[in-house]
Image (tube, rainbow, N blue to C red; front, side):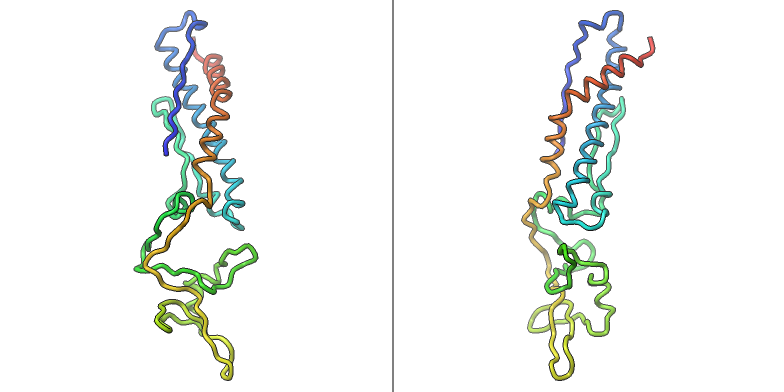
Amino acid sequence: MPINISIRVDTSGLRGLTNGQIAKQASFAMANTLNDLAFEARRDVQEKLPRWLNLTRPFIPRSLVVEKANKRQLTAILGFLDRVHLIHLMEKGGTRVPHQSKVLAIPSQARRNKKGGITKSNRPSALVQKPNVFVGRVRGVDGIWQRTGGRKRAGIKLLYAFEPAAEYPGGQIHFEEEVRRLVRAGLEKTWARQWARALATMKR
C-alpha cells in the first residue's frame, strides 16, 4: 500500500528567493527525504526478516530493494523482487496457486534442518533423483514418496503431497506495518535535515 507524504514549506524566512527556486529546492529535499526513509526502512526490515521467517540464508532479505525518487518523480518504491513472489502471502495471507507446474509440492515428511527449513538436497527436484524416491499415487495420494527399510521391514513415507493450491494464514511478516512506523517516526527529522541541506547547497 502506498504511503502518501505531504510537507508544507514555511517560506516566511526565505527572502530573496523566487517561488521557482523554492519549489526546485523543495523537490530536491523531498526526493532525498523519501530515499533516506526508504533505505532506512530497507535496513530495518532486512534485519527483522530472519527472525520473522526463521531464515538461515540471506536470499529473501537481499530481495528487498529500493527504487529511488528524484526531483521530477517524487516516489520512492520499497519492495521485493519477483523471485520471492510468495512474500505477500506471508504477510496478508491468501491462496497460493502453482507458479509454473499444474500442482504444488507441499512438504509432508521431507527432512528439515534444526530451524525448520528444507535444505536444497531435500527439495523435490533433488529428491526425485534418488533411487529410493519416486513420484506416484499411493493409497489415493499423489506425491513424492520414499521407500524405507530393508526387504523384511520395507515401508514407504510421503515426502511431498501434490495439491492444486495451498492456503497461507498470513501474519508471518510485518513489512507494511514496520515501514509505516518508521516513516511516521523519521519523517520530520529527515525532512528538516534535507531541507537545510537543500538551502545550504543551492546556487544563488
